[in-house]
Image (cartoon, rainbow, N blue to C red; front, side, top):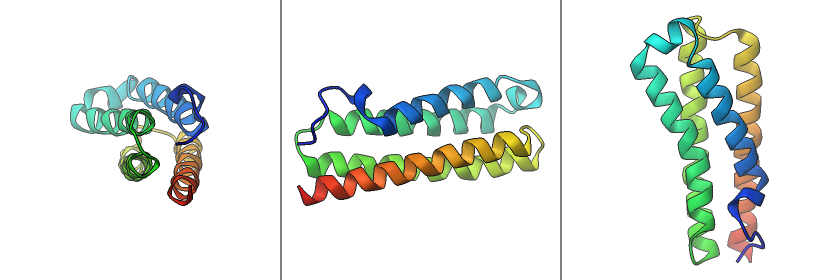
Length: 121
């Protein structure tokens, strides 16, 4: 099993937590806060990234952990897709879009690397 005693030690989880807080702040503003469907979807997807990393850590095997990391990567892609809608509707700026998209890409890479490591060990 991977050598993390707590899921909070996993850098991908830490970064996903940071992203989720940013998403919640952005979706509390202006027009975005009134678009209940998109707001709820992007919030749930961002929380799902963190939750899947944490849940995977709590599983009994590296293989199960790796599967949950893949689910987290799917949620990363979902948030990235929602960001395009938010930008297109001018709910977020290009700067916010680029910052979040970049952070999400980092989390995707981190979870992929960790999943590959877990599958080999």
